[in-house]
Length: 221
Image 1: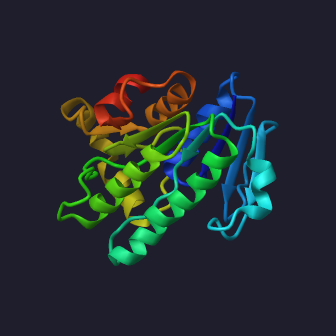
Image 2: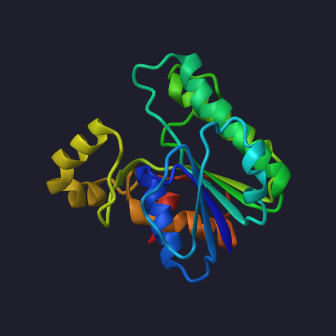
């Protein structure tokens, strides 16, 4: 299986990259992003491309792929709806539309979040935009597409979030995260389970296209 990862430097991207490199069934891993990844591996091909809205120059390297794990994302804190929409909806659909044309037989896995609003009409801005993004992705002509809605993700294996306040929160909660997982299994998962779930979806799919935290935890275990 050949896979593409966007957002490989983020926490979820690092997690699925780790699982891909450990899995003998994954032959090739392509990462696409604006910055170079320091990690090297015989399976890895890093594509550094400044403008993800314009992929013409790298299209030849984005063919013969079985799955795309789209892990790019930003916090909506302090952002206007227009700015958040450009980063979350416009960029995601721009990339996904190109991939659907190049590799219509691929499985597209998008990392969303708990609380996403599929109706696109709720009061919470980020949830509306995420819901609109999910709905648009599900309409694209991929072989299959899955939307992951994890809750709190506990980082494992040395993986860290790039967002300062996430890192601070995880550091603060680290003594009680095992307890949180037991008390709130519907809302807490781990980076390892998220990565494993993404690979499982690429291999064998799932009964529904939108996976909540409990589905992710069940598959990832």
